[in-house]
Length: 284
Image (cartoon, rainbow, N blue to C red):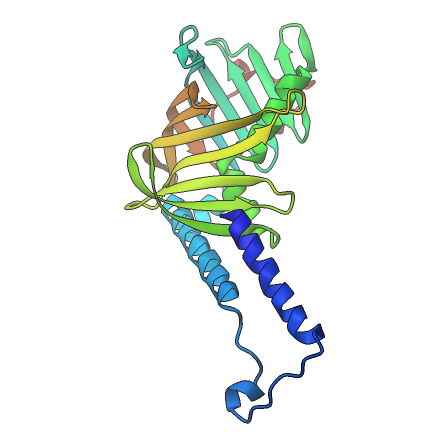
């Protein structure tokens, strides 16, 4: 689709330049249409209609998620249990976790029932915190995290859409997680592409997919997320079940117990050297 659209736009520009530079004079006409200039190429009109339809669909999804309330989320806390998979098979038992996010680029993830192991990400840096103190996360883990954040659903809907260089393509009907859906593809100025599927009835996102190429073996990888069991939290619709797939195999599942929005988070939790202890904090 992206290739066909690009070819159509290139052909339209090339055709116009040929008409201007061929040296063949244009036939004279006294009609009002001719006096006002040539009509836009059909391919250009088709591309505009396609982009308009795609943006309308995405705007419907944002409204379904909570509209202005969703777009103005400042922070979010989530508690739940996560399960890891290897080659599509369960890998160990489920682990409880807490996540605290402050938009646009701060997140703290706490593990174990004691909450004594944490990872903190601020900007493009990541730290692992244990009883021994804080140390930088492994480069591969940081790379994976930053890629996930770059293509996060919230980032797509709250940041990508505000970039005038992003192209939206309406892809039509699809099936996502056994839901009849409508599909949109977004492409940014760096040629990063992400596909979103929206439920035909609720307009809520049900699937996100993107591809990336491994810088070492040059293999292209496909990552997908499925969003299910939406519930309302503070005026925002939140998927309480999120399943991730890597090259077609299930890689992780997360089930949220509670979601709290805009409660105001302690800045110390995002400072890896602050000595922040979640078990000593007084709940508001």
